[in-house]
Amino acid sequence: MNKKDVIEKLLRDSLFGLSIQQLATATKISRQTIVNLLYELKGEDKIVISIVGPAKIHSIKDKKEVRK
Picture 1 (cartoon, helix red, strand yellow):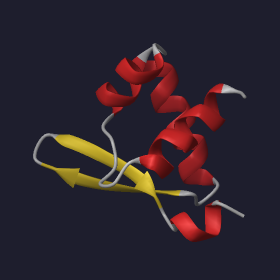
Picture 2 (tube, rainbow, N blue to C red):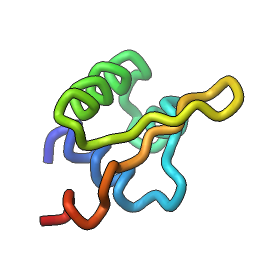
Picture 3 (cartoon, rainbow, N blue to C red):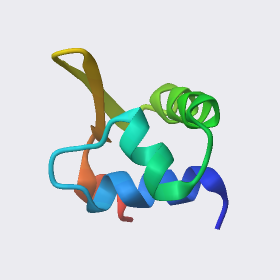
């Protein structure tokens, strides 16, 4: 399982989404790498980014569709 798959799985399993810091802590991957992978997922139209206060919360766009 590659890093992008790990992030996608964490986001899929998350109820409300996760911040970059939460993803970095959970995966032990650097925040910069997390940002790059999230931009790839955003480009693939798999995630939604919501701004909540000072943080960006990332979540799966359509959990049912991604689980195929």
